[in-house]
Image (cartoon, rainbow, N blue to C red; front, side):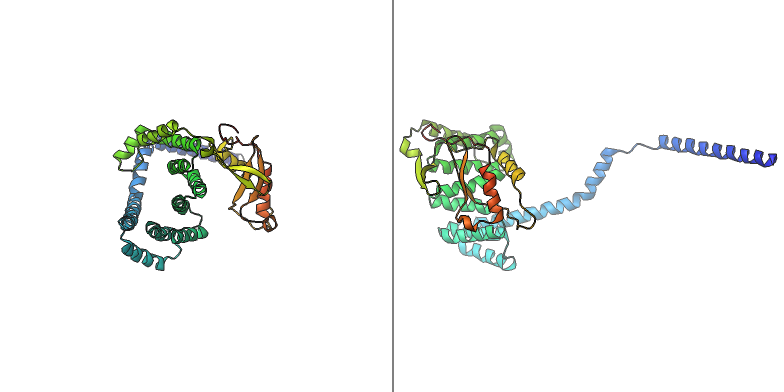
Length: 330
């Protein structure tokens, strides 16, 4: 029995010594192993994905050149050639946004604005598309429906500040000087002289900042009267006269983003109700900035969906705006 105990003790010590030797050997191997080279790993990864990226860039470049060639046909008034190409494309993909917009552009260039709007509206019915909205704004501008043009350019501007420039131009046409100045300044804030020079070197076309400054200076020189800037319309819902043309537009105090955050945080609807993501709401901003008489455009109250009723409720509890100005007064 004592001999067995001694043998067991020796086995345990031997086992412990072997474990210690293995740990020391493992640590030495780690110390001798070279540290991973992160820069080399990144370089290897780039080399691995480069062919795929190059292939994608080549495809995009070819696609852009293809659409540019169609646009060239339209700009050079080669309408038959442009229509021939676009019609073939639409036969293969009848609901392709870009093809439908190009078809609308052909009609626009021909001066047939009704047909152009048909294709732009059809594009919107398939997929709400800011590109179609911009083209619609151009049509509305030609038809001198500046209110609608401003509405479409505003939507595009919320996605891309580039549209601050055409938005400002339409405000000028609509005799809204202060709003025009505001959006010209936004354009200049994003396209400074240095940014313009850099983009020009890259071959990217950008409207020159000096030309925008000339527009601003000409607006500041112009003297205007009460009748040239402010215009009223009778609002049947409130039975009052309200301004629909003004010198300075109402502004949500924390911007469009702040307004969207408020709506998102306060909009509630049950899972049983159908979801709706697009709303056309008209409302009045009173002198004190409160939102008055929100309504769904073009719909009687009895036809409102559950989502539309909820959106009206949210707008009624919305914080006050910064009211617009007419003749320098709120």
